[in-house]
Length: 71
Image (cartoon, rainbow, N blue to C red; front, top):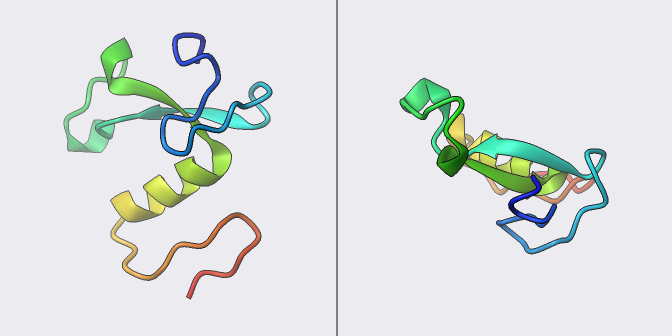
């Protein structure tokens, strides 16, 4: 999080601490990503992290913003 200056690597939003940002594994551990490798980590805002997680789980519909219904 510090390395990325609390800035979402997906959308560029500068987050104001852990209530707005989450640590994410670039390559999920379930797909062979290293849990503790800093190079496999990135800062994502909560909305971008949620969308990325849905994509990784195979969601095929449109993923809306937080508070916006997905179609």
